[in-house]
Image (tube, rainbow over all chains, first blue to last red):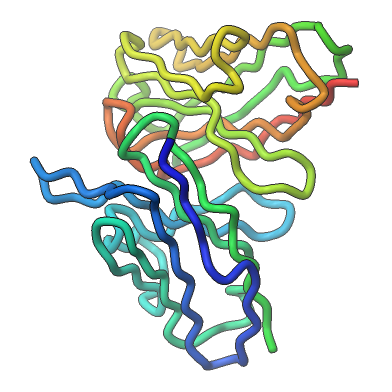
Length: 113
Length: 120
């Protein structure tokens, strides 16, 4: 199984500041035939289902504010929120869908400092 | 507008069975793989199973293999999860999730609100 490890487990950032969450996979999730990284980022607010933010590692979902961006390839990925807003308080998860089972990271809890 | 409405969650005794359903609307159901993901109380997300758009391919987490069966009825736009031999550790919210692509290997782009399964 591919193990997904997020860091940090929790993060407190001031409003307007940058937040960075890392996700590392135990093996590459880059599919060479189409050059796509099978890595997705989700946001989950309390009492709500997860919401898609970023897919194929760096493609922002329609309607997601452009302060959210994803980067990385192979085994190392980053979700960046360029200027933290109050509504960004949530738990963020990465997931690989390169190989079965499609594993999630443990989640990163983002709070306001 | 995409909608996924789960049903079937309940309180069940260990060793019991339960069938979850998910009614889908607002998209071409047969063109999308569908998945079940669960979340135990206060815990993270755990992928459970996925089925291709045609229903020909199904995959399971080790925790579900041999006990759970995913299926779909494309004529009724409905996804199911038959859960047998339930254990206390299966207690969770079960989310129905729409996959962006027809085969199983794609991101989930929409989640239902979830249905609670309690095994006790």
